[in-house]
Amino acid sequence: MNHSDETRRKLKELSLLFDISQALDQSMNIREVLAPTLQALADHMGMSRGTLTLLNRKTGEIAIEVAHGLSRSQQRRGKYRLGEGITGKVVQTGRPAVVPRISDDPLFLDRTGARQGLKKTDISFLCVPIKIGKEVIGALSVDRLFDKSISFEEDIRLLSTIASMIAQAVRLRQAAQEEKQRLIDENVRLREELKDRFHPANIIGNSREMQAVFDLILQVSEVDTTVLIQGESGTGKELVANAIHYHSHRADGPFIKVNCAALPETVIESELFGHEKGAFTGAINQRKGRFELANGGTIFLDEVGDLSLATQVKLLRVLQEKSFERVGGNRTIQANVRVLAATNRDLEGLIESGKFREDLYYRLNVFPIHIPPLRKRKTDILLLADHFVEKYNALYHKSVRRISTPAIDMMMSYHWPGNVRELENCIERAVLLSRDGVIHGHHLPPTLQTAEASGTRPKNTLEEALANVERELILDALKDARGNMARAARRLGITERMMGLRVRKYGINPKRFR
Image (cartoon, rainbow, N blue to C red; front, side, top):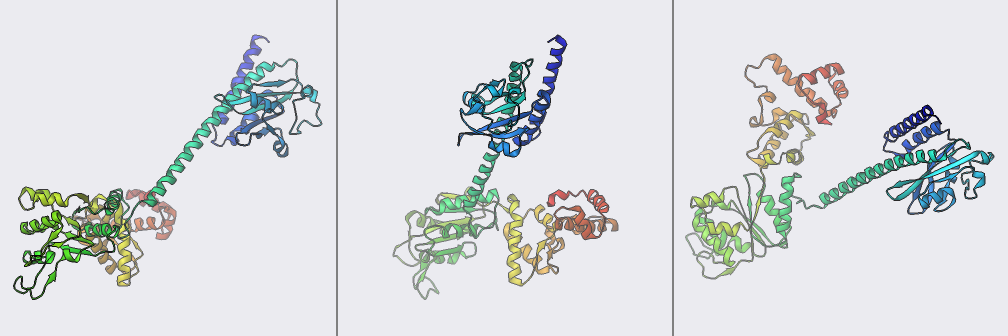
């Protein structure tokens, strides 16, 4: 072979390898890319038949994965065991094999039957292993017409290169499939974990902040330790106390609630510890206090930061000694009571100002739980709003079916100083005001209104007022159509072009509604 012929051969090989590499990159489905690979090989080598076989490690069977020049029935028949036939031998040993004339080699089985009726002295068979590292995963084989001038060594070298490229493609796809399966398994595991995570039935919320609170409730419910629940007014401290009690071993016992801020200082001691007959003017009968009534259960001291210093001393004794006396009595009563306390006040600040006892604080703050304000868990706002809509629909026999997008935007942008209690009051009011089954922005209190939503911007022109109404209608239509602009346009009776112009005009992103 002269120099120019050698150059043409190498260029042709490079072109083939490039075509095969391009084919192997086309899809993650290995079957889809192997057929074009064999076609490219047939075009280059004059191959009449070609097969790619893969080894099933579980069954030990070698089967044709993809073929060129074979019918489907012939492909189905092409199955071998390790060491069986030329293909089985190549997969077993990991070494290539060349059969110049298949008629001369008894190992050649023609299991597919593709060469029946053909002159077998004219057919050469070449087979190379496909390896990932040292592991043989299959074989690549070709049939071609016998020609004394053909260099089998060159053909084997080329086929081995292609087999390496196929092995690399298979390895990459296996790694991708394994990663995909890992992600699926991880997703399933997380779903199961979230499904199994503790969630008190009396508290609405799925945010990460509330899940942390739920985890603390679960941990502390199993023991009798004192709990101090802190948080702003309206965050649901009483609900947390309920959840702790009813998930504890004391759930069948009494749950006594005391609002320390609502009781006058003159009667707080009697309310907590009871009194004997004649203990003071008006004490005409013996009366059990809240601690005594809570025996065997739980007492919840709400707004404990409002207790007087004198009452704090008596409460400290109960926490330390688990006993007390009724007002006017001298008999010591044992207190088998679990104490849960709550406050929205800064107890550490009260300690510094001398209004709260430091020793009582440490007795109460054994297991602190902080309830996040609603503005810190905004992902729960719509969940809570839907819950309150259902609640007041049933209470007032209303049929509110949805909350408009502007109303949702107003709720999500508001800072909620009154927290969940304020949100509930707003929804109750909106349900009462609604006449068309929808809560609109104007149904919400003025404190939630924005200048844009309420149309009260300074120097508002007629055009701007109309634009506000138009924007709200477009937002509602897009929400109803789940971001589908064509459907939203039909609902509003305008063309898709007009809808597109208005969406751009108001800077609305339809994708947010999908």
